[in-house]
Image 1 (cartoon, rainbow, N blue to C red):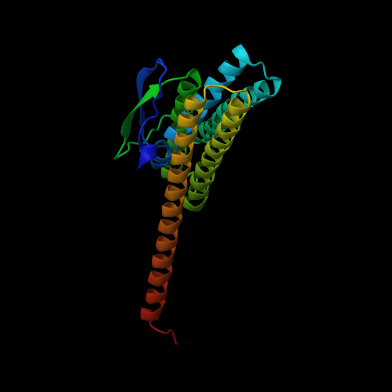
Image 2: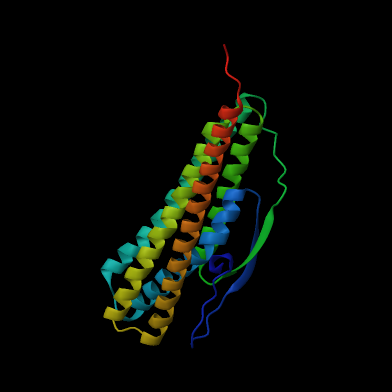
Amino acid sequence: MANGNTFEPQGKYSSPSLDSSITLDSAQAIRVFRRCFETASHSLFVIDVISRALASAYPDPEFKKVDGAVGQMMTDMENMIAGEIGRINALLEANGQGHQKPRYSNSETFSFAISSPVILRFASILVRFDEMYNRLDTAWLCGLVDSTKAQEFRREKLHWIQRIVRKLQSLSTSAIKRGRKAKLDQSMLDGLEQKSKDNAKQMDADEEASADGVDARGAAGAEHTQNAEEREPAVA
């Protein structure tokens, strides 16, 4: 799938980038990288590039607000994740389990390109996001969080970060429109816009596939329950 790849700038201009990699343990963080990282990286790159172009040639106070909003989103994500990690660690420490750390059977290492400082920041956030799930899994395995609450937490935080990526997509689309209004390089904007559309389609397809998978598992579970009830002998 497209979002399983890393984003690298393309176009007639020579853009710098650094090669980097991250290792993720939890299924949720791995899923975010596969389905959202390319989209998030591209969106952050678009906002950063157009922000700098407008700042140098076409001062736009409104766009500075957008750039500031992205920075605040990153800060809010960092603070939320740090708060959850701290809360779960406190629970583990209070029960003498602070030293525990689970092994994961299918950790994955992903390579990506740093074409903007904010992409590195987002990658660092994803590493902490993974750590948050690590601590939750530890608390769950130690019997300190029941399975239902653990699953609700996993699902809630996964949807939370997916919504943020969607918001970044929206901000990057607005940035491209402002760039066109300011008459920035149209060929550059065309390329950025096409990439944004491709990423949006891929995210939609991934989410639909995910929803279908959940529905299928739910239907299978309901059928299994019904069959079990039918097989269960009547109690006199």
